[in-house]
Length: 574
Figure 1 (cartoon, rainbow, N blue to C red):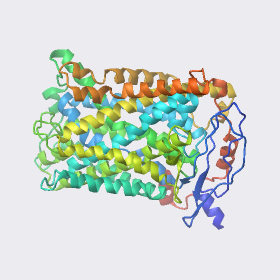
Figure 2: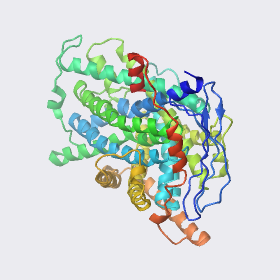
Figure 3: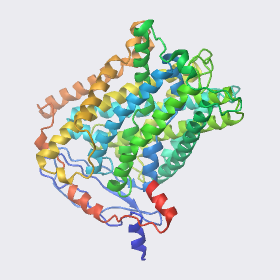
């Protein structure tokens, strides 16, 4: 087999493809270039061609398409699984009870599934570098929505970096409190920034191994939970549903059935942090992945198993192995640095495993922070392409890394230094609340953009050219929009029972922030550019520019043929 045949067999296309705009003047075009990586690790750029300008033509700098299939698959399954599940779930368990925890994760999983499928349909049609959630909101709704949600996305991703570093610092304190928290925060932030300043191939490789550790660890923890459930631990204490019988639904804020319902609703709101922006990370990486249509569809299809196995079974495991009244849980009576899994292993008398679990949680926090900084920098990069941010943020270095975007986005990680003067649980709650609601608002607008995208597909008559079609649409979009809208509006209801200014700001500051950005841009667009339409017309939504070249490019990616049973399993997995 020749060298080129070998490349094609693993899904690498060396064909130079022109992604330049060729649309008519009234179309919204996406003019993207990408850099692909050859077998020697060197980048080469697609060919360019000059074309006429369009009203919303984008001219991004080059991004590196260096993520391989295995990178994309592991990021889809395990990427962005961070401290929300490992640590934040403990706070939900303490406040709301085991049944509320499990049901909330089930319900939120169903919402996030549809968000991922909507993004997958839109992304896989035109999987170009920089063409992701922000592009869809901008191009299918309006530039004003794109401006407002772009900055919302950016600061949500950026704040999540601080939230993950905060939780990571909590985990470190489990071993020692003799070292100042600021030192651990500095080290953790430095590692995340360093990983994002290197080639996207290094990002993909690091996330591949981080995700592998998380998936193996979570699988082992779920199996161990089953063993403890049936009394197979060293102390032979059969747990069963003992803690559910104590109090399946904790009363929250008030007593009786109303209090139990409020506990469940609070759990639904708080559980969102475990999922927030993870569909966007998968969508964003699709454009920088080799054979994006093939690998993107594969990643999107597997996302549901991530939701079922790791979030649903993970939350069920937590609910049966540790009591919601345990004072060592994160956010519990003693406010100690305890993950539910760590506390459960201690209670079961399994020595040493608690330290292994904490090490895994620390790795997960770094991994999630790494993913969120990656997504934040790409969000800022995408806005700079459209003129919604200073052009300097669209500049990339010779490795295809938007270094200025990475640098500015990482500054929000400094919020984690609030740990030095405030309780860790309090800081984590502030940062997670702000970022979670930002994510909910973004998901609502993604749903709206998706519905208009479907209409544009029908208008242009290209339904048969849509390579990935999800189930239960458009009803899934309506369900997601409805649920997320209600959750967003009620997320801070608890502050009205016992008003607290800091909690109120954390719960609702994002709503006026997005509104001011939207109407400010809308006024500017009206008075400066004379644009009177609130939404882009369906006929002006361009889904045709670059579609031919993407489809042509796809034809040159041949299916990998396994030579033995080991390769067959590996190609299926990654």
